[in-house]
Image (cartoon, rainbow, N blue to C red; front, side):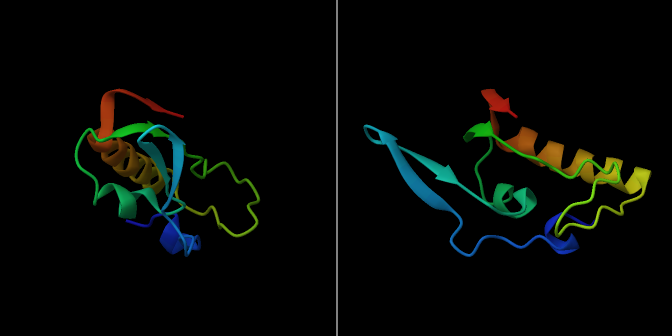
Length: 95
């Protein structure tokens, strides 16, 4: 399975980082391949996931080469959505 990371996108060297958002709560942001991050998270432990996956529509990205076949793209999409479903809380949001 090819993921966005091994197709040319590398994780940010400082990811994740924490930011206080008030009180004792902190937000944690990751600029990384979600499959790498999600495998280390507890089930149903994430409130919000914001993503912009490659859409496999021939878009000219600056670094990413969008060359997955239709079946490979659907398999990759199923893989990352299953991983997101595992970590997302029942009342969480996926954008």
